[in-house]
Length: 315
Image (cartoon, rainbow, N blue to C red):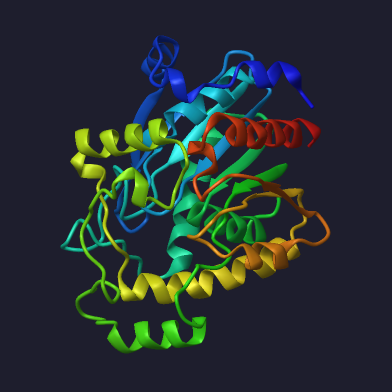
């Protein structure tokens, strides 16, 4: 294990440190237009002595602004970084009249956007070895990208990838119900869905770290344009299908793929991640971690980051 890496990771007790603030001032925040004229936001920073380029594919409701701490830590390890806000969330353009609805018309649209991002933004500005790091929904998007563009990345690592969604009832029933409720003309929330709301820490399913959780909620309070609520019925249908395709894509990966599994995940289905393990797709379980591994307490987060950095350096 790379012990040098362990000492330089950030601590939940020093969030938004002076060093992180100086780092973030060097990050370029910009956007590009997709083929269908949607504006997608991204952040990038080139390391002067880069050992490789990491492209980050974030989860549902997320923005690259949430990844400041992770980007800082990976930059310290010698990587250049690019991070995209997926269509309909973060600082990217919304796709419905209600800006709080998490919506997509086709899951493949996320993959196509990511492919455009790599072609238009990443490749012209970073000529080194490319690595893919994704979280949750971003892991599913990344996995499908790898199956369609197998030659771009040397290796990929996904934190709690959405290879299945934790559902209260059987998947077939939930998908059928969503299809029944889906309004093709006007996207509508899933049953019980609503606009953005911040759960108190003791009701959250994301992390055991009160400090990182409150920092995350403060970010969304200061930047209300980031706020996103429940998904639409159509998003749910597309994502159930996309997640299933991602399991198969991971099992058949032609590049090394690492799954960092959150032991206490209640958001995505760990059994689906277990089904993805095969050939070049390996899994490391992170104990005492909820869904947001990169937002966890220092001990599980450091364990995950060490595993991530060791994996990237080995590939």
